[in-house]
Image (cartoon, rainbow, N blue to C red):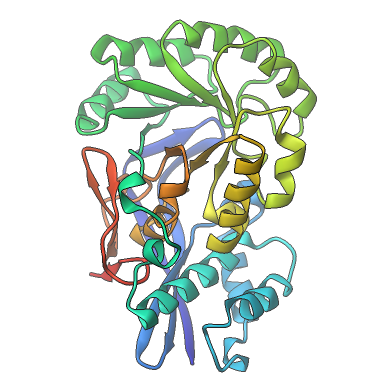
Length: 337
């Protein structure tokens, strides 16, 4: 059993800006798990918002001793050990989880969606993310999103209305808005969302800081479009306390530690009749293809992290006019370039 990892710097096609800051590239860590001549690929895309960096990912991965497990099929046992090594480190744990699932799928010669009994035709259309930018660049990004019927627009800055007005000058496509905790008060959020309702926005993601559940519940009672939790969701244990605060949840493998916990979150949210979205960080086709395997189970997808970069080291899940196309290739269905 061979386990290795290495850093990859993903270059963004455009500077990517959200309410918390801007980036031109994103450092990720690729994991390769090799056993019986089969290689499973995983990926960590750490976020400082959750206390992770490429350095913390590498330090965590150095502590993992997968060689103590002779049978990679024992996922519960192996991932229980990995999760118990340290608190947090969810992106690092997700990389191992993804690599092991990829290996199992390849060992069994079956894609994960089929292993889980899902209908690939139910995979949703993904949104295309438009980050905060100058008005000229917003116009260019809208033009580049021609083949995507749904736009996810980053807001949470003083020029929010100007950004949305600019987009609406060029298209009547579905718009979803993500504030990334950027609005400072419930009153500001209420004013912004009421205006966004008039612009045909489908839903708003994480309007207030994650700690302000009381403010978000107050806000939800006063608006007419769904409010989706993002930064508030990191595990299935979070879902019960969010059911009266949010209408739905955004699940990211890098926040929750991988595919197994993501599936637990999905079913916990389904029990409570909450809407479910699969989201992503800026990621290569490894992590995007991993999340896509779960996509037939959810209502919304925001799995475009790989199309926002110019140097993806893998080929994975395809898009057909924005719709996720799940292939019959085993495991994640990714191939290293």
